[in-house]
Amino acid sequence: MVRPGIPVRCLHRPLVQGLVVPWGSLTHNGHTAFGSLDADRMRHAFHQRLCQICSQRLEERFFVLVRPADQERGYSPEPALHPECLPYAAAHCPMLNGSATHYRSRPVLASHPAGRPCTAPSCACPAPGADQDHAARSGRPADRYEAWMIDARHYQLAYRQDAPDVPVGISLNVPVLREAALQPTRPPCSTCCAPPWDWRSPSPCVPGPGRDAAPVYATPKASRVSTAYPVTCRPFPTTRKPPGTPSVSATRSWSARPRGGRALDHGGAAMRTTETAARLHRLVLALPPPPPTCIATATCVCSPSSAPSWPPAPSTRSPPCVEPPNQSSVPGRSSGHGARKE
Image (cartoon, rainbow, N blue to C red):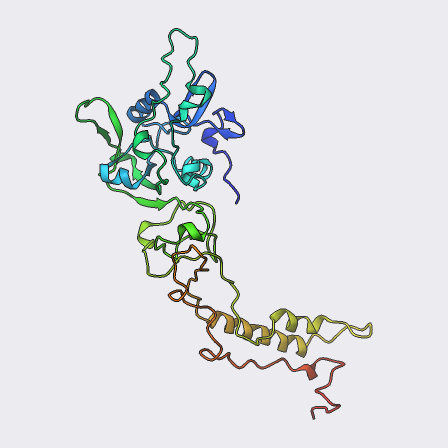
């Protein structure tokens, strides 16, 4: 997978092991705790409409990261992101790219160097257990994140009832321009076949034809409709040919094969070879696409009897008649047993 490069907006940000340090991440005592946000910078980003990655002001459109729990509460608890900063964050954040399947069992600062107290008298050192809502999600499976695009005219903050001046996030009760699913790369079939994933969208397992293992940033939510098909657990071949069909490459090589040190006549033989290749190509395109298959394992929840089989048996779908190329048209060849076509 080719990860996106550093956005131009983030070129001024410092790097740690080649990764951009998000502006909203907690930095203390010379160490940055990835995955932990600075509460003061979060409030500043909410009020000033800043991006949590590059710290620059949001423009006409922005993205917010949304979990299922955030949809129920009606707000996103993190600052927004630029459309240019979202792909970089989604590719390198373990919670967004699927490499982290569960939340941490203990707070980030419990064992991180950034959680150690410093010697500066004016520094309000962060508490080791300062992560918000950590007890509610400790050790639980990771949520599925989505990125919602919102127009800057509908930028609204959500506040706490007991503290009207303290924002808790960006309101989601506004018109949404687009909802994009950040598709993660999931574990093997034995642990991820339970959800009825849509086989037409990027698969949570290994990619198939037209699928990409990298996160998808522009998949409309309307197109991700769940179906009764089982999940695709391994890619099926993209080139589908009827049984017994000769390969196109073999027919094309006839008119380019020298014999006896002399060049071949590329006139009629090449024309007939091109027609044969075009006919085979039309036959391949005419085949219906195969249904999704699930390679059942000992722990897979997909029943082998319910999963459709591909390819179908030869008796149910007989191969079309394919006329082989006329070998007698090639110089130096005969139609067989010394007979020649008059």
